[in-house]
Length: 259
Image (tube, rainbow, N blue to C red):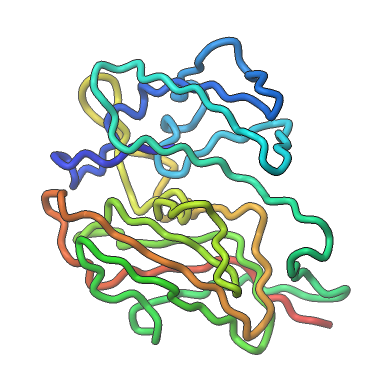
């Protein structure tokens, strides 16, 4: 989960009030899994800031057209802006209804990184404070398949990115999410601080570029096939925000060779 960064503390990347959220949610039978609202700073690392999600075990199955009901409380004294809850999981399709690529019967793998840099033909350059780029392509090299397991994105230093969102799409341009996902939630954070108590902040130790966003399940992309992504930035209202000369993205996973 996340709230919008504070405009007055933009350079600190503070999500003030995130520690004051309490939640409860229900299964498809509308029965809640907790008696009362649970403060999320007791469940999620760093209060859920910057992609620090809370695993749900055992998993909860929601049939098609069923409801995921959530109760949310703000236990703090100030209003929260743009509260977003992210639920990570999988869609389940009947066999044969969608194209499902997977590993060959015999294979070997090589850990591999695909950087999408501004030097590449389709890297994102000069991302304005209010900007949108649609259907940016990524093509797997023809020598091997690629299994995508994690992502990293965004500049680590000034000029910084704040309200930037990414929609990852398959080769048919169908999205992997029902709406754009904040880049630090999808790809792992560039950096940040956690609002601690009523004043002061602490560094979000354990987050950052050393902790990339984890994709579950992994995405298998055959050689010479493509993925697409949209990127949207809305930082015009933040002090210190400026045009980002480049917005690098790194796809982390493994090459898969047929044997």
